[in-house]
Amino acid sequence: MRPPPLPSSFGITDPKMAEWMIARLQPQPMSTYLQAPPASTPESRALPRAYILCTASLISYLMALFVTRARSEGWQVRELAADHEAELTHPQELTNMLIELAV
Image 1: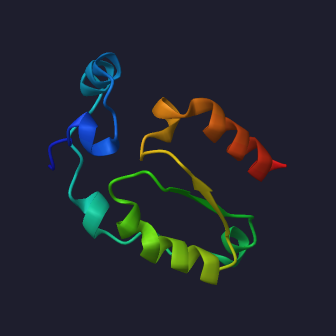
Image 2: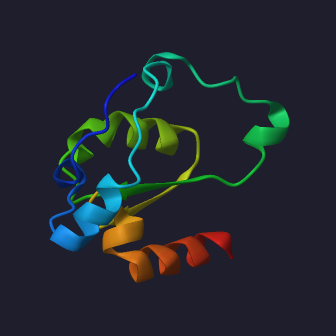
Image 3: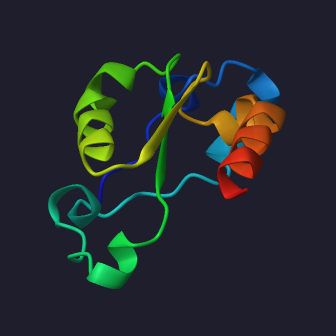
């Protein structure tokens, strides 16, 4: 099991939010990093897909490969000026983006 990273590695700098997050983080199995996801099907490929790149994230440069692949497969790619945990740090902006994507 991989121990959970510190909240600061996700861009969480508010002490109260960091405390809240630490209480909920759990170790993650290494297989989630090493095991390939299930193969897609024609039905799943027919569904609309989107990728949200959080551009203020410390790891956004690592996500370039995923953005390139998403675009090559016809996904909508959106950018959000937020860290990795946008649902905590930018909930309204993320909610607005998800609603736009769902319409």
